[in-house]
Image (cartoon, rainbow, N blue to C red; front, top):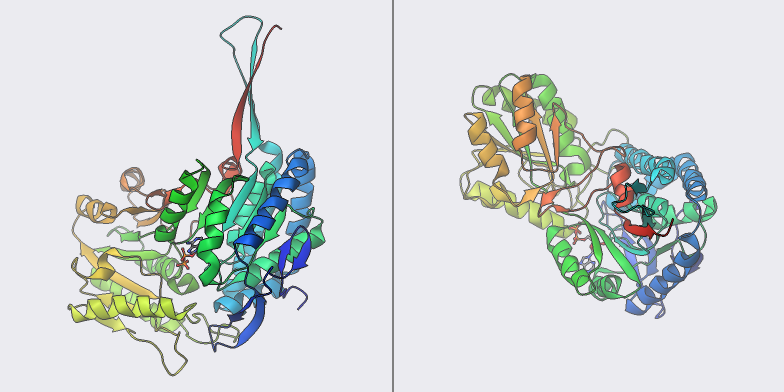
Length: 483
Ligand code: ADP
């Protein structure tokens, strides 16, 4: 396992914390320690930021062609090391191996995409209102980006951000989640092998205890130009507030509360297949995961019955490194408590679990049964909150107007899903759903090519697509006078 690194990565060196402190990374299946790695603090964060700032002086002026070549090499190496990266992802996140391989392919697609996009971050020449003058608009890299990532896609969240910012000409300091830093270190190791110059990518590892002080430096240090964060809305707001003291740019991908709406004209079998993907991928631990299944009353019973049969057949809970397992443990005990708290509250208030509804203690303390809940009412916490676990909640609606009202009645606005064969309805829903992303007749919508992101409290900015690279640039206006 040459990618299993046990040190942080600053200025092209594998290093320990200035205090030599360490913390353990464990496998959620059995709490076995996989590695002990540096528990870095604010001083280490400052060191890494200074390195990134120094490196920006050269990297920021490299050609787009060169950056594209470097990204392409990194992509090639990540692709040929898919199996080893996937094993690391599975061991620290609990995600089944097959899904981990899917995550690597997805993560790699961003490196490939941004290798291609680097050479298309164009400027403009705008017709001038004055004779003998010309207006040039160029896109310049913002500088040092602080990257803070979560545990649910520990590899892809790195490549999606770092691919984009490198294409733009920025350098970065990455603070991966305390639960899953080994995937980030593996990505950094391959970047080193690919010839990414020292200092362009720096990875500092911290326990949860140090996240607050490290996060503060990453937001407030004057060398930092932008904070790129994926995680909870609560932490996102905190970082936004810290970034505001220096008027820093932010790119925030926060929580969702995705509705999955099925109209009577839909192909029910297809909708159920897509529901499985939208709900149970990564065991429900995805910000674009379907959080509320809103099913038209005419087809409600049929949908619920088919969904129940599919969950029963397809969700095989267990150790994700074993063949045939499709749902692993939740990542940590906090998540288990959150999910079981939501389900218990709903059941106590009258909801019914047609499947699951409890921790599968015979497997371990982090395995939550794949659950299907009906009779859910607005007074239950699960009606409003992001579940982030393997619990499907089904609700009935009568018509388009009602479902739009229910679907939009949330401060989140990330992904949404609609199943209909009525073309007019598809367009109306696309326009009226207050979400950054709408999938019509599909349960999976993310890729490198489209812009990924939310509105309302789901975030600011977009990732992927050319817009994703542009997030890390500033527009510069140069007036050429006296021509
Ligand atoms: P999740 O529920 O996905 O763990 P969090 O928002 O808690 O979501 O965590 C996402 C990332 O944010 C992790 O890398 C975590 O360490 C980091 N984080 C949490 N609190 C802070 C903070 N106060 N400052 C900076 N980073 C933080």
